Length: 287
Image (cartoon, rainbow, N blue to C red; front, side):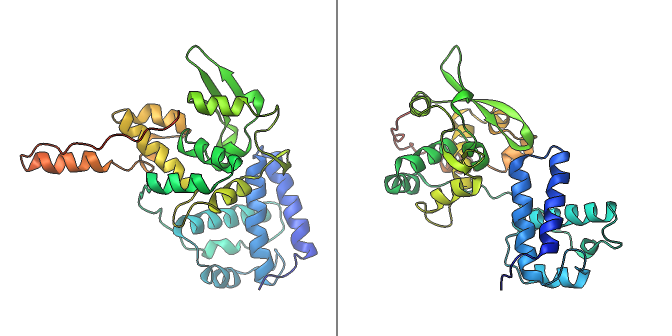
């Protein structure tokens, strides 16, 4: 059961947020860390400096988290209590007992085109634009939330977007003509105004899509769709795709790409000495 946030936790999280800000962590990262620790604080029943290894293990053992979520939460807890030990707030770090969680195997899961089309029909104009920015430009939810009219840039071939990526890294992403036109038609300022720093929070961006797209798919799967479609259209140009998606390595990009059914089937047919099956006509869509 969730409890009110105690004064000791409130003070600890405020001090920790100042530490993160002093380390030039992004506002999105600071918000995420605070929310993750608040979730723990409201359920563990003791103050931050009274948490023991046993209590922490009991708490994480009751959580039905997916492996990647669990890895992310453990990283947050370890970082928080390492800071506490470094600053003399605790003598013993309770996260030493947390087990290691292996990274999950790559499982790219793009949204099927008919599911995407059905979801778009259910969405309002704002949510449709959010979905297109993930599906047609490969943007993360945090990057979509921060889009501002000042980020639109004309170039020699059309319009591009200055994307504010993870870790304050900037990159340029080319826009399709239709996507550029719709962004340019918005009022000056943030594309998706909201109460947090003037724009919608990344969580709200995610929730808007979650309201119209059926499980198990999500906004993040639309980024898988972009990676898969771009990989196929570029004949496997992972290096260019890595730059567009803002990944540190091509290995990470590869985790988003699902080989097309047509390509896999062509390989199987070729191995059997058969001609590749004809592909159905490509779906026409506005660009």
